[in-house]
Image (tube, rainbow, N blue to C red; front, side, top):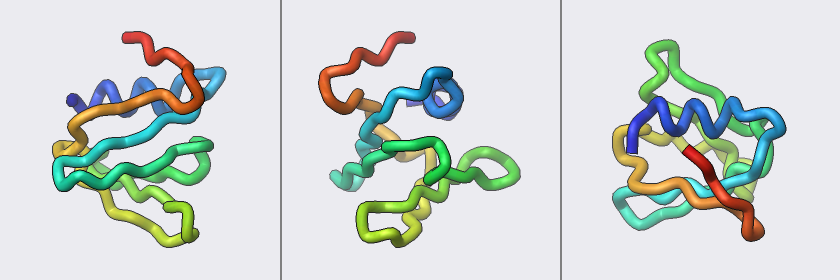
Length: 75
């Protein structure tokens, strides 16, 4: 997965919620773009999880992006 693919999905308008699957087996929900911010270089994302805690995500360890609720992710 490339960081560009994540950035494109995050910046899509209208925004479509998606799951981030990580190399360690965790999965995070991105229900709204306001719960994600990025490091200055863009390789780290800070994602608010369901418990309202911030997860630090190395975007190079994202293995897949999946749509929520049957929405298709287009390239």
